[in-house]
Length: 305
Length: 275
Image 1: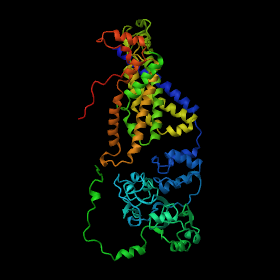
Image 2: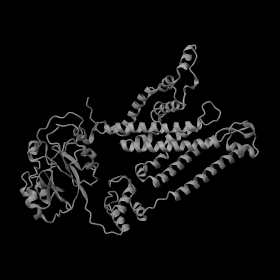
Image 3: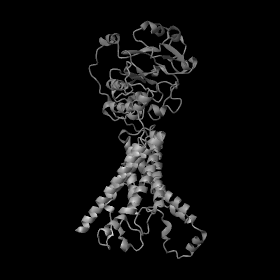
Image 4: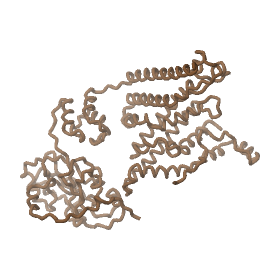
């Protein structure tokens, strides 16, 4: 009996000894290796949701907090926390929050299957990321491939292929940016939506005008007409771009001329349908029988021998 | 066998033949969780290697001086005895008994691993901030990585002084370092494969961990091809005379027992069978 008690005492003493030793060492280490951190940084970290999702573009919440405090990173990058989180961060840092707009994707390609030239039959893996690494699937090396990588990435059923072109359903879109990351050709960009409908240049082709015309019926040739009539546009690498920081949806006269001048009609509005669009289809009859969509009932997995 | 050859043999038998992931199937959680990109996989592997070595050093020390079964000082007869045995005799325990505290093993090793991780995290954060940025995310995950606990238990198994397969401290350190290297090799290999898998059309039910586990199995089969490499290497590095002497020996006699540097480099008796 005493043997058991002594053995138990020995075990307990061992654990106690190790505990005291380790505790003392760790305590000493935490003092010796203490790193001075801006106290605001810890406050910011507490205010962040702590999801460590990487939605802001940093590895985790801690890194974003560091960037906010030390590098003056924008406060509204946290998509999980949203506006309330940005407000909390602004209160901690004692700065005024700039007005932030919801970010929504814009597909910078406007060519449907019929508009794309030099297309070839593609029998490989039916994903954009696979088709993108070989050449010759279609003439345009910049535009939408139409193999639905973005549609698969979208968890909100908000982007679909319509005639082979990725089209965003802005009613359903929440701006998570999954499609932007999924697109191997980087033709989808997240843009601050200052209005329900935003102006966009729906082309990504950076080749000179002649080459664009050889592969696409509707591509931007980089002619520079829009640049001449409006300061909002800037042609770089044979491609017109819109300066969204300067964009003001109220001042239509600034860009109305450019929309009319564009020979390819590539400057268009995207976003939720306008009242005019809704009125145009209001008279149309809905189909009497709605066919089930096989994709919602069958597995999408494909077997290719 | 020279010291360098024994190091090479331990390295090959731990990192390749008895690879932690492909032979023992430990450490599967980080292996599947962090192997999506080669860069992060490498970070995890390097962090595991570092912590494994440190934890093995700590656990060898604690096991050798406190936990292992040991005779009492008066009965030891010049053999090293543990602190526990000394205390046992001092406080009137039977001097002929063997004092064995190895029941504390699991608790103590987990304790030591957590302690090592904490210490490493603080140290790296202070003195190597870029390294902390690269590995910092993985360090807390390592506390529960079973590769490290496995290595500690393996070390404790071979920590009985006087037994033929006793590992001294340097062998323990070499073993644990290459156990970590083996894990790093496995996770980086898998990271590379999974980067390529992004381009493949995998049937939906198998996406993610499913296909990863299948590939792990195939890789494990491939790694079985390393079995026996250490033995042949050992033959090669042996002096010519010894080889000649061996050839003179009767063919039925078994090979010398010293051909096994690590504990588990024998051919597995049971080959895994498909169900």
